[in-house]
Image (cartoon, rainbow, N blue to C red; front, side, top):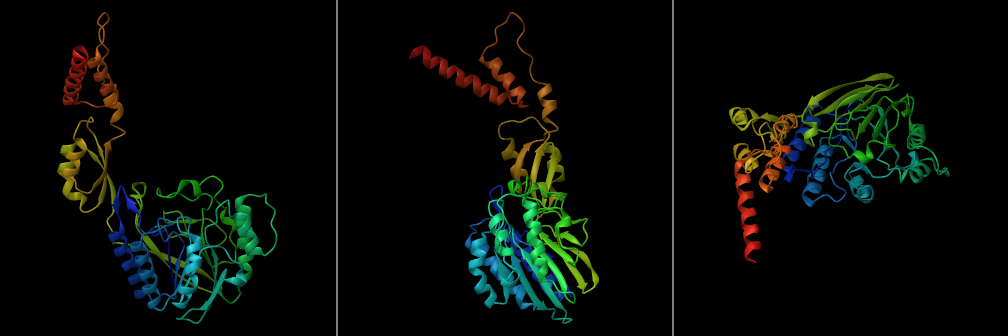
Length: 391
């Protein structure tokens, strides 16, 4: 059988106040086209469909429309909730989605109550079993483990031990003659962060070793980490990565979805299909003159600009006029130490430092060189002093 693995759409997200919905709509259309052109038997969406637990109507419209279009390609469509999604809402919509032929679950379930999905691949007729593990927080882990195992669970224990126990129970729904898959949203120990993940639910105790996954799984389709990567494990454990960079920490990514072919008793073979739609994120550096010289090279990318000049009044406006897609403008961290080192020297011994000297020293310590600010400070100082003398 052939299936498409994707995750971390983060529909409805914005970057520095700029909505990404237009770019996301283009990416969604491309993903639907990939599923249709490759005649996949299933599409597995490994969580974080939305960027927020309370997504806008526009984001929901895009998500639902995309899932319906994926289903109309003839593929099975299976979606689980990530840590950015509202799990209870996913479960509330589950019956409606089921009526449309789409599986959507928000919270872990016992294998016989929806925790393992069974279907036949349309192209080959092969039986397929998909074990589903939506994101579970530390606060919810004990209750989730009880639901999956249908037995009381002690309150103590590490997060990964409980996740491993749930995976072990879900794997009882596998069959020897079937393609056995795991669809989960979590952090695997040793996985590399992409840059836009929610830190509090990625590090600390929120990780499990790759060895926790059942060795007889043909493929483990993961979401949560935005960087495309493969983790060493007894079975193929893969993050598809986000199909669109979420934050500037991810501007070196190559967005993609993963096309996988697998058969019972045969190791999974996958390849990444690059996503070309959506504006890229870029971090650019230089003086204002250098930025102007290379402006045409940046195309329609959304930019983080690190300026290699001392800060001055109006610098941000000047850069944004030159580069309208500059969402963030700051002084290059590599340039600040040089600017700080050249701060004005303190007043000579025997001469008392006045307010103007102190202000000039402050500007130097911040890497700011702007005589207009010094002049404005002097003017304001004179006004304050004059008002006090005549008050």
